[in-house]
Length: 298
Length: 284
Image (cartoon, rainbow over all chains, first blue to last red; front, side):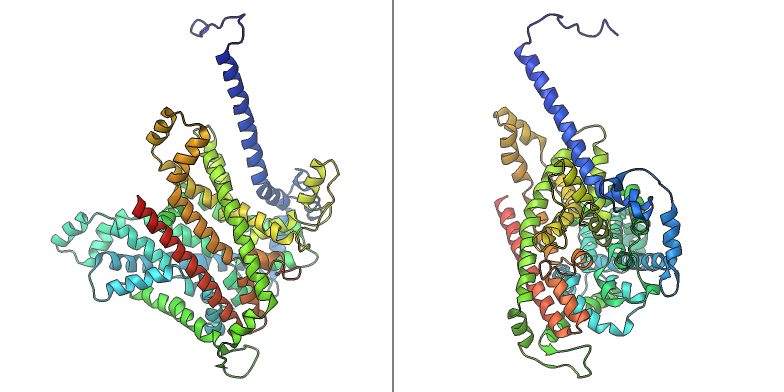
């Protein structure tokens, strides 16, 4: 080992180069320190939430000591479940079931109907295709917020149901557009080969096209899952009953009750975000790809 | 094949959109037993003569004017930071993106704790400690001079990771040859950033700026949870006004007029974006 290490002159005047090297090492250290500091400040709200969920409620809202790792326990988690255990408060499991049902239907239903539409627009030739394509592109720029009020007026009769929370979001111009652009860039050779072999459009779709489309399905699934799991404006307008209330709406109600039990609110928050964080950590690559795909296509 | 999605889009997007325009010219109140009646431009006249509308519009504009440059600038810094090949850099990338998957309702609740008044609030306590007791605690959300700034800071924290990822993809799309050529021409780090990085990021930046601007006009969740538009109208926004008019006051016509105005803003921004992108393609 030692013989291989180039020996440095023991006594030597600090040369210009070594001084520069030293300065570079110092700036490198400062860089690391700054990076660590940025990371710490950035993660503080998340740490605060997690630590708060493990502390007695009286010690959560307590200045910087709210970040102390003392008196940790899982009491707040059982507290949340006990807090919501009657029909008037709603059951904690029901908030979860509502959020899960809404997200699942939006994601799965959305994948089916929007991929079909995207496929038909990109691949099949039919009358009115150009017109529908233009309409879809025009609708992409229309944010949900611009139609929330009339939709609320239209669907007033369906208030306080689970289905009213997912039905307007299954068909999505944005998802159709993502599918459309993906299919458009997919090589046609496989499909042509399948057609020569006598497969119809449906059969071609299922046996040849779909297996090559994992990236776009993952992107659309992730983007629609994120937005429906976080959905807030629509439930605010459409849901009053805790029995069909989704998690984001319910945490807003929970933190508004006095006296606020901050430990339990934090535990509620951790439970609410945990599935998304797990899905994110597992499928991180696809998240990033989904987001950037939407950026490039947008 | 398009039928299921087509029906959905017509029913839940196209029809409501047309309905919004129709409603904005009518008097429709959920608390009234009277049927909708023609109201002409009255809803818009009321809108443009009300102080709340201007305050909301100004808040949206201020929010956009601060958040867009702040968040984009920060996102560029973070993207440059995590674009280096260092051990553990993937963890940082994950960390900066993590708030993006947090529902805004939850983010608002956490930051409500952070912004709590007195020494109990994390931010007050932190500032008090690092200034060695010289900082007087503030009621961040209860003070009209700081409420909007507090919402801005929180929104930037939540959204910057998304921008960072998009810019990062842009950075990785810039050919290393360009940097090499710039270095051969004795360009310093700043010159390389100014003349290689920034032009290479143009499309990503146009996208990021436009999306952030449009999102700024959609500002609602944070306001609803943290301040209810207050104190005064200091944090009210167009969407917050639209929802309270329609939902709280039952004045659907007024809410619809607000959403039409909102849509016109979004439309103008989108057209601007298309235009800028097209110019870029013409140049390239």
